[in-house]
Length: 269
Image (cartoon, rainbow, N blue to C red; front, side, top):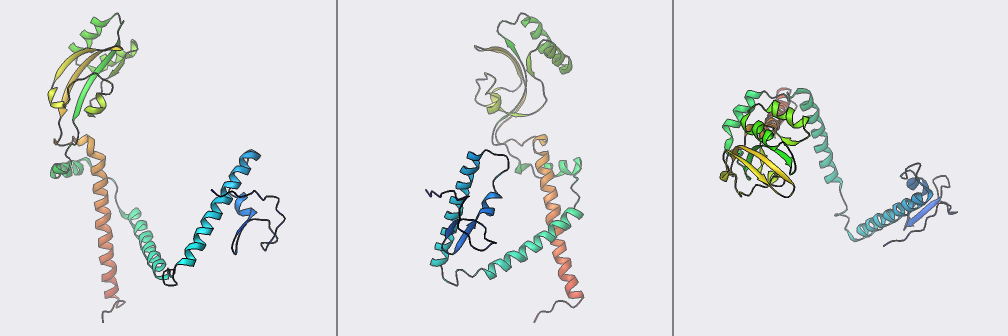
């Protein structure tokens, strides 16, 4: 570990209009301004000193490693002009493509396009884990209206009225018509079955040391079933937009080359 003294009051000066030097590695110098500009204003003197020491140590380490690398690489290995020019060209083209894509590509994907893509590509949306649709209510073990909750929950289909009752009586519940992974549901419901196919539709009353559980299993999907559309809608939207971008960029490339030939700006020898 490098231990660098804090030299904020250092009397050594060299160039940079006689600015104080905080460290040296061979022929390179670290000046006070380069450290102080990286230290947030308003922190305590102790934190300021600690941060300054850390910055000095990091500079020494990085600079020494660079010097060591430069000394042990050949001139050919140190020649990055071709790589830098290649990178510059790629970056310029990428910036131009990005600018055109942002201006030209329609990122709105209609519901019908999403559904069509889903129906044509269902094989790409296979489940790796079981899914389940479930409604439930959690009752404290000493709850004194259990029979009333049982009647409302299992005999009524109106989730709005069930939800209103739960809110009024401060009961925990879940009545969303959405898919969840069985492995996640089993973390907060004491379901014993290992696979979703063991459930199908059922109504259950369970109990553990904390709660009574009133549960309705509404639907299940097992591993290798197709994921429901609502679970992959955003993924499909992203796929379609990316396809549009790819097609646009390829057409733009072709058009640019064609324009070059048409204007006699391109010749092949």
